[in-house]
Image 1 (cartoon, rainbow, N blue to C red):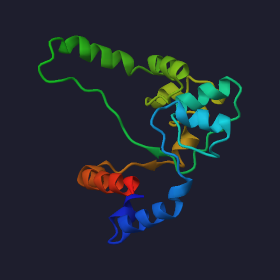
Image 2 (image 1 turned 60 degrees about the vertical axis):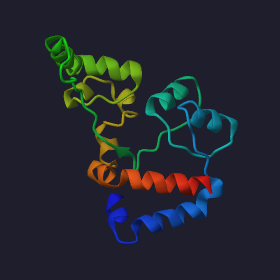
Image 3 (image 1 turned 90 degrees about the horizontal axis):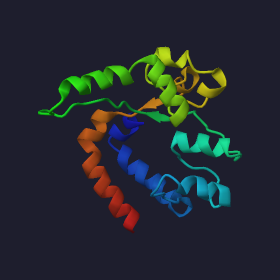
Length: 165
């Protein structure tokens, strides 16, 4: 995706496509909106937080997740320099990173665990909707963080100007 944006005409090409579909786009501002719109029939597809989609499925809604071309990026733990209790923070990070803890968190919050050994602890029918499940990661595209660090501000400004037209 960012390879196309890095091409000489890539960003202009993306904005031309946005121009073509602008009238069919609804931009959501809170995590609840996409599923409310789906339930009401206001949209036929949407991006969504995985945890919200799984909760809706458990509530009886037929909102299947489509993983082909999904985007992923990495998050990490950090301890702010000068924090008063670094040993406790390190202990928490070690605890939260254990496979058994990640399994519990993933099953409660419906988010995929990052520790690969944690996936093996989760029932296959549960992990099929995790973004980190092997079959879903195989179809995923990694967000190019370097591209967005280098160009995010200018593209956000351009996008906001485009959206305001």
